Amino acid sequence: MQRTLSNLANRSYDLLIIGGGIYGACTAWEAVSRGLSVALVEKQDFGSATSANSLKIIHGGLRYLQHADLKRMRESIRERKNLLRIAPHLIHPLPILVPTYGHGVKGREAMTIALLLNDLISCDRNWVIENTSHHIPTGQIIAKNECLKKLPGLSAEGLTGGALFTDAQVYNSERLTLAFLRSAHDAGAQIANYATVKDFIRQGDRIAGATVHDELTGQDFDIQAKLVINTSGPWIHQLQALAQGKTPPDDVLLAKAVNVVVPKFIQHYAVGLSSKVDYRDQDALVDKGSRFLFTVPWRDASMLGTWYFPYRQSPEQLSVSGAELQICLDDINAAYPPADLTLSDISYVHCGLLPSSGVSRKTGDVQLAKHYHLIDHGQDGMPGLLTVSGVKYTTARDVAEKVIGRVGHILRRSLPASKTHQTPVYGGAIDNFDGLLQQANQNTETGLSDSTMKSLVYTYGTEYQTVLDGIQPQSERSSWQNLLASQVRYAVHQEMAQHLSDVVLRRTDLGSARKPEESDIAFCAEIMAVELAWSEHQYQEELEQVHNFYAKRLPQGSSQEVADQEVAELRTA
Image (tube, rainbow, N blue to C red; front, side, top):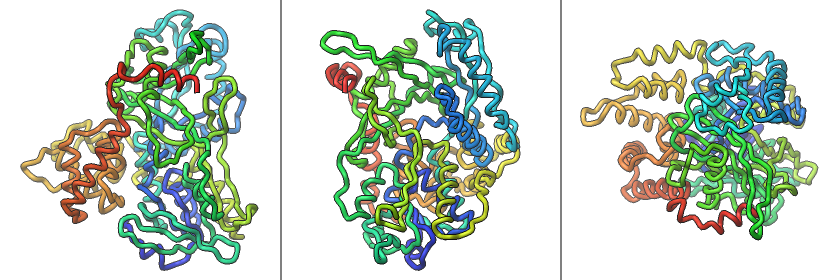
């Protein structure tokens, strides 16, 4: 996968897709697989914004039963099955335990019915999934004592047992986005990261492409297209304003989604916990109801989330305050006191921006939009421009299928039926995942541990051997360093990595759960400097950019240093 911008500028395309997150990636793969010519540009790195910052759960939509939203539930179940099928190296079953209390909606009886309905509605959940290790079992209710055994220290007051069911988890959401893009590229799509749309090309009143600025060389070039699709996530409003020749709005309400990574404190299961949410208002305790949270085992850590805070600033200014992080920890500690977490336990913070439908009058909490939106701007006087606003990572492929169906109608093209639901993404053509993993572990020549080989297979799927073949052994390095050097070279030459952060945060597992050791960051920078002919000045700049990123994502100071007043203000906002 090469970044060749001259290819983008030398032809006209059916589609120009703006935005290389999960929605743009899926749309590109869907379009090119159905015979359309596609160009895609991303202003930063692929999947570097919201698509990289999720709880990593591929939801089957059990929670939609509460509102009898069976349509969304079926969509989620179907797309979970599709992802387990087409990306078995990246998507794996995830057991989830939810304690049951009392005899109401959170009680044992209600959850028994919910699990039975879930199994019935998802009766086809394992069809066509060849890897039996990726099958989703039926749910079950466990006794109170068994629940306490699995969750030591859980409050026993009112506890009646637990509901145990299975969803799925993405091992590396950034690499799943990249797998869709790689699939699209290998099928003929032309793509580029660090390419920013500066203006739109117009033919009469019609949008006919865009002028793009290459952030690496400083050059501008035009991309001609019959249709332009805006999948830029939190930047969609800015691009809409650019197309209209207006000033971008500065008051768009978005939901800032926050997930926190801490040392693993619950083994084997993701756990759904209810945390009472309240605040003090003039010395009176005001009840804001409860918030449902997950603690999810992820790699060798626990991920906690998700919290949503209102956000009205520019997406480029996104950060998380110490007060916001303290609220997250307060909620988890209230729901599960044995966690006893402080700010110093946080190793990483995943943060992204999602579309919002407003603020709850009851609780004051920001609300997520419930559905994706596809806007044809021909109705706004800008024919040739479509905007896609997505909400869920899980259903991005399904939305892309619907979008390209609409594109076929607009272009008056009879497109073949979608096949992305059954076509493995790059690295995902695996009939026997356990067999592939066993085969990898039998390779003793590398000197790598079983856990390292497992991570390699989970990351690259069938391409893991290509990475191993790229190892250039050097005696002064450990086996792991030789592997890391091969991964960096693979990222540069095969996956369009341009900056040190691309490798540390998204192409490898090195830095997306915690800040790596300084020596490991410098080692990656040294390899990239050779491969990309960096000057000493650029080498130092790349190191500084990575350090600045972690400074924004990690809490500064201890819990005691976070002012109670700041937390109180956020609670009452």
